[in-house]
Amino acid sequence: MTRAHRHVSRPVAVRIRKHAALLAVTGLALLTACSDTDGDSDSTASASPSVARSEPASATPSVSADPQAAEETAVLKAYSAFWAEQVKAYSKGNTQGTDFAQYAAAEAKSSTEADLKDLRSKGIVTTGAPTHEAEVDRLSSAKQVPSAQLTDCLDSADWKFIYSKTRKPVQMPENRLVRYVTKVDAEKWGKQWKIVNVTPQQDAC
Image (tube, rainbow, N blue to C red; front, side, top):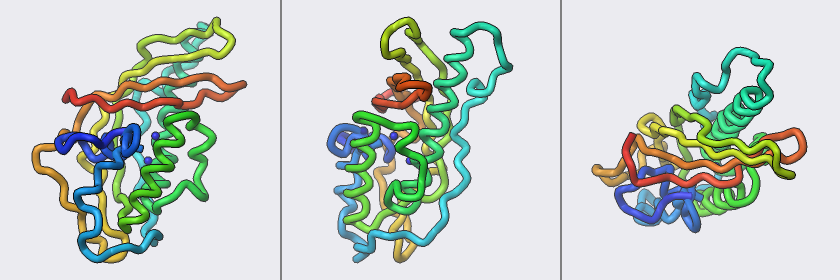
């Protein structure tokens, strides 16, 4: 579901979030090239979202008595949920009826909202879901606001952008990256980890 979209070769997700700042997931500048083709301007999609396969294997390690390990598990689960809810939002064009706000904050939340607004204006939604291989690079739990940095290898090959009315695919550049590195920042607000920034890279993984 989650800035990215300022380069023609960037993956859809990337262009979506950074539409204004990120793949807004975005890009959102991203789908400007395919803006008003297909004559579709309907902002609501009737298709139900595909089951997201975004939870990395590392997000469900065995329970550990190590507080640091427990926090790493929690932040990975929050990141997985962030994507699962974002995929639901992109599949219908808005975050209403999802728990996206529970796992997203700051730029990760605002950029996704901006991206969705842009896609709605073009009558574009998504089908399918990306997959992930995320790991925690650093976690600081001693600060007043605990924070963490993650690196994800996001594969968007099965995450497709389509016109909501015709269900026809949105044409994308053939040389775009579909499997790429994503840098993620998270913060713990109260008892809940939230994703605050997601930055797609132009590096394949």
